[in-house]
Image (cartoon, rainbow, N blue to C red; front, side, top):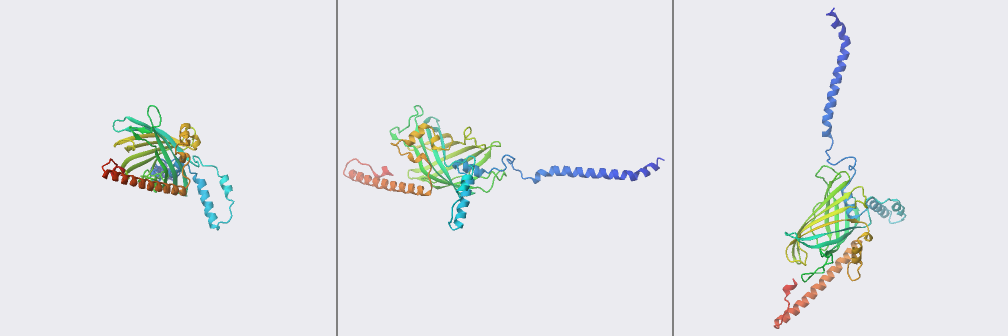
Length: 368
């Protein structure tokens, strides 16, 4: 009987054993898939549901210039369609009226702040530094934005806070750039594997001084904050001799776009040649600031300074409007330089003549 039972039960046990074997195989395949899944998914360090649809280029140019990319794109499409139709018809304004302003965008932006100029390497405070940059953005295409800007910074006494107009007998003037034009272009690769975090490639298109620029690198600080680092290393020849410096701009953008409580902010550090009113040597500047969206929102004492009729600062109430304005400013500067050169040559010639007659005079070398 014992020998008969196994033979009798085998046909009934076979299906059970087959099911157990299939379950075993299925389990092993599932485990294999579980271990192989990470190798089939791109390893994005910062990619998640919060930031996977973010774009570092769009975030930066909107923060820095205020440009509303969606509205600018619509206007460009409308212009292209208008041109394709032979310039006939208008009536495209309703689309602009229906467009809701994109978060973080503004027609113009002002980056205002303050800091200090330090003597290096002692660290003694020479002056307080205060000023702002005014900018606007122009849409070239989805991967290229042009910035029109101007900036001005004043030096103040670190103890009295009064504007410094003279230092050890030398006149002190603000640092001012009446115009600058930058191009920002989208980079093509990211060093952390996240395609939404490409670098931004800046170049100086026009300005009183042209310097080489390095890529702007984005980094997430949590899920809703992006940091942008903009390094700048300068080694150029000027009319006054070599100019060497390094500067680093660090921007912080809160992607919730709560401009009332957490506006975009800036930290700027610089080490290099001292301003013209100081003796030869290097100094260090550090500056902290944040973005305003209207000139009217700047601190009252800054607005009073810009609006002072006795000073030539009215230009800084707004950024340059377009390239036509830039060309006019360039022509004005060139004309001023020519006039200054003619005047200096005339004075130098007269001084040389006086010296040859045995009288005290100023040699040409003083005007180089």
